[in-house]
Image (cartoon, rainbow, N blue to C red):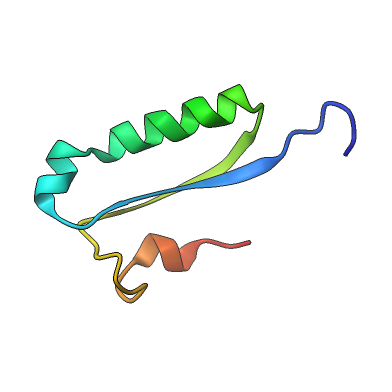
Length: 69
C-alpha cells in the first residue's frame, strides 16, 4: 500500500426496535466505529443507517441495500 494512502471504509448502523433506538443508540454505534477508524487511521468513505429494521433479512433495509462496494 502506498505511503499515506488510507484504507477507505463504510460505516453501517442498524437497530431493529424503537426501544433499541433509544437504549442502544445509532449515535453510540457511530461513535464507537468512528473511534475505531481514527485509531486505525481508516478513512470513512460513507455512512449508512437503518433505524427500526430487523436484522433477520436484508429486505426493507434500504441503506444496507444501497451500499456500493
